[in-house]
Amino acid sequence: MGLEIGTKLGSFEISGLLGKGGMGEVYRATDSKLGRDVAIKVLPDGFAADAERLARFEREAQVLASLNHVNVATVFGFEHDVDQGVHYLIMELIDGETLGERIAGGAMTVSDALPLFVDIAHGLDTAHEAGVTGLP
Image (cartoon, rainbow, N blue to C red; front, side):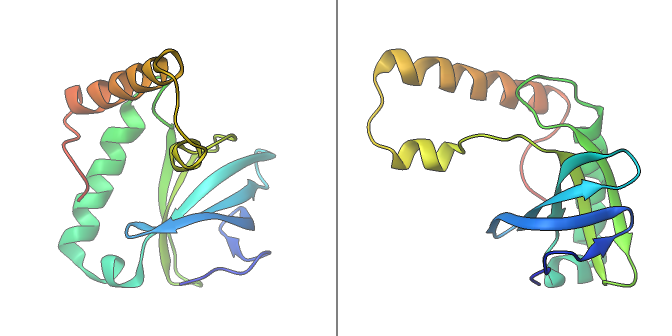
């Protein structure tokens, strides 16, 4: 399901597509209530139609929302927009280069790669300690 720029989901207005994959599409959006930009992850239609999977994802979102770690994006909420017919996560928007973009940029020195992977490991450890074991 692709959302057009300007689409409104509750108090959020979509301003662009950030990326997409098997777990949905992620958009940049502006929160009109708080005046900040956020990331909105829209779940795929088939995913949202499966009640058991949707419930697992919502539980996972609750766990992720409880995390407070510099290397884990903050989850602000999980909503269902009846008008658009979509379920979505509201998350902290992190500007910058993605890991995929960094890898595509070519080989890294050990001194560049090591801090990056230590940060990833710390974030994953925090999520694992909270009970996040994988994607629903």
